[in-house]
Every structure is written in structure tokens, then in C-alpha cells.
Length: 179
Ligand SMILES: [Zn+2]
Figure 1 (cartoon, rainbow, N blue to C red):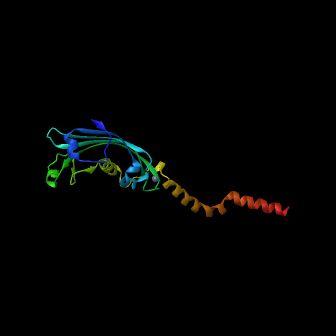
Figure 2: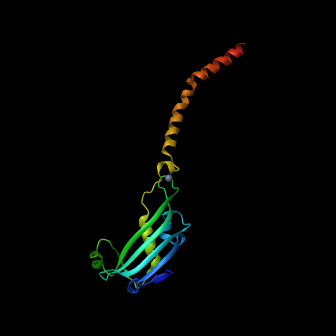
Figure 3: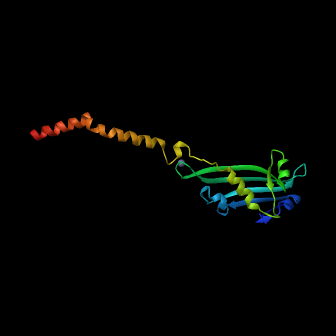
């Protein structure tokens, strides 16, 4: 059954009844993620399937895709980060249960009756943002080569007076004074 994502729900009940949600989530509504973004314009497509696996575990299979505008740590400008991510959570009610999960699952520790379902998508997106993102050198506003050229120009400047053409120009102007 496919429907709009409710604000809050009991994940255990959703898994018991095989619920699937698909749609878009506006980046503007993901405030924790917003701290990592250069822009909160746009939206991400997602799907969330709450079900049971072959071992009768309650699991959530998520998918999210779209593009984030993250912040380059060199120039602090916007930098596109394409997202196409799949993940699997297993609903657990205690740490012991979490430790026994197979590798393919991350635990979703449920301590309250309901959770904010959008948090599942937001958490995955936050994990996808690299901690020290930087543009490729040729796409970054801070160009290391610009800096190097500036240094070269400065060191070249005092040499201008030794320019043989400049000396020639001075001689010529002196000559015209004589005439
Ligand atoms: Zn940059």
C-alpha cells in the first residue's frame, strides 16, 4: 500500500502491515541537514518500505535520490552532491537486539511509541555529506594557481626597471630633449 508519509507513526506497526511510502521531501523542511547545505532550495525523492524480512525481523528499506548543494570547505561556495542512496534499518527495542543484527542492517532503536518518519530520510542524507568536501581544483573559487601567479607578479615587478626596452625608451626621450 502506497501513501503519503505521515508526520509521526509507530514503525513497528508499519512493519507489521507492510506499508510503503513514496514521494518528495522539501530540503527546507530538513532543518538539521540545512546546517550542512549552501542552499535549502529543492527537494529529494524517497521511498520507505516497512516490512518483515525472512527471519521475521521488522525492517525498513529506504531509498533517496536527488542533488544537495553542500558547502566547499576551501571557498565556502556551493558544491553539488548527487545522492542515490539505499539503506536498511532493523527496528530494535534494546541494545542487545541491536548487537545481534546482521551486517546489512543498521539498528533503529525505538524508545517511544512513534517516530518522526522524515527523520529517517534526513539522517541518511546527513550521513551522506562528506566532512571535508572540496570542489575539484579547476571548479573552486579559490584557485591555488591564482595565488601562485600573484606571488610571481609581485616578485617580477621590481625587475621592470631593468627591462631593456624601458632603458631604450629613456635613452630615446633624452635624445629628443637634446634635439
Ligand atoms: Zn570551492
